[in-house]
Amino acid sequence: MAKIRKTKRSSFAFQTFTATQLLVYLSHKQTGGASFAKGYNYEATFALKNIAEAADVYFELGIDADFKTQCPGYFVDDLVIETPNTINCFQLKNKKFIQWGRGRKGSLAFDFAYQLRQPQSKLVDLCLVVPSVKVARRLAQKKPITLSSCSVLAFPAKNFVDLIKDGDISDSLSKIANSSNPPFDRLVQIAKLLLANWMFCGGNSKISSLLSVDLQPFIRSSQPNHNALSRLRPKVAGILSGLPHFKYSIDRGFFHCVYGGTTYQSLAFDCFSSEFDTVQDWIEQNAPSQFPGDFERMMNTWSKG
Image (cartoon, rainbow, N blue to C red; front, side):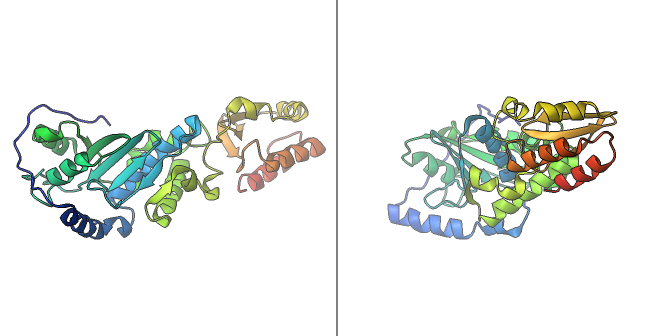
């Protein structure tokens, strides 16, 4: 989704406060921002999309982004994503009527303006997130000139299953799945586990910690796929190539069975694991000659971990 920026501006008069007054304001603001704990809400589904995108970067570049909510000392704090060089702060408003306010304490304009004034050693990006393009466009048009560097983003208010069905977060989840064309139920499973981990950590975790053991059967390996291909023993490859109507693929570090033109089963562990060595041992020792058969029954077991 593209960030919407407009040029029309309004004038605002911002209140000024002492450092002590600001600390009191922040403590009340963060105490009142506990809607995160209510379940699969707007904040959680928006975090889910960003977690999936950051996980893809983690797999590709090894950047372990730090995700936080309701951060002490932050005025824009519904979601804060920090990397070694950047800080992205998001404020989410899931309402039909939203306005910047006139710069008074408690208004969006106040929070964004004071966040911009905070000293930072990293590149900081501030973004207001709202549930529709229409609302985002209106807020971008009426953004005060002092907030010209801030952006407005539209993100729909739906449950995570509908977000996947409608394509709002499916691409982000697909990039971290253990196959290039994951089925819908696989994306739902990944989303459920990521959300559960996010809720369990209380909205404060690095990406590497969110990719828990429970997720390993469903998400890609961090190692290059050509390394996974080299892990398949020539003898095993020869046996599998002799099975009629059976094909296999190694995609994103995982072994997948293709039978009758569709992906039939995927192993619950990647090709770099000792479990994969056990699978290859079984194939070499039993030399299956048909599928379905004993090999299919073993695949059903291995696909469950």
